[in-house]
Image (cartoon, rainbow, N blue to C red):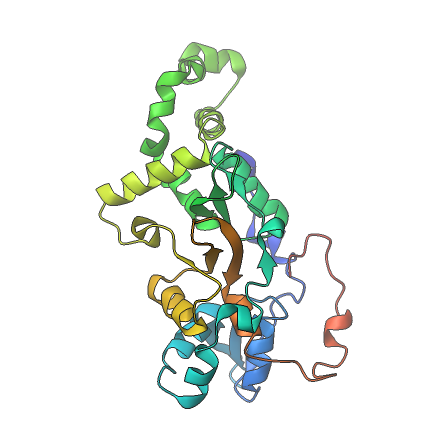
Length: 288
């Protein structure tokens, strides 16, 4: 924690392949925008005005899904959106390939997996089966930072905090207050399972009366649902992915905003030329 707090923006700015960013201009086609947000795995694309040297707007995957939702009633959308997920080849990722955690895995393990695999969220399934009990997204790490009461019950189960928070021991260990708190927090994070974390966060949100998707339970669908239904669900709760389950609630796949957008477009041969073949060298830590 302390090490990461000392990082500067410049330390990570080069991790993006097309630094400082890959942008669109207003004259670019809709197809270009959709391809960048799907096949080329960008979650957002800035729109720039080169004449005035400014960013006019930023287009996100979520904005495209909202646009599709607003097309309800139009002939082309109704024809496309009425198709069942399996008819469109969705989900693209089957359950055997999904990165997931079990409810008795630690929440720290879940966040580490997200970072290692470059994904923004993971389903939490029951041990010994594949029934979905919840999901954890990278945004949920905020609760470990801003809501320490989430893991307060774990303090009574260990003497770690008594050892480290003792001023005499701090002096002996040579720990600053900040480092001591970071060490205490890290110890508790390792104690919290993914299942307990979901329960604790839900209780925290209910207490603070926050209207967030987690309070409404898991957002799921089935293979024979119409694409239009899935788009409506994703847009209504503002989430990035939806899990596909069978009648018993067992995980069968996952559908992301990118997957839906990719079903809408096809890249013509040679459309981008050799731009994505290495115009700029790709850093070892690039995730794009």
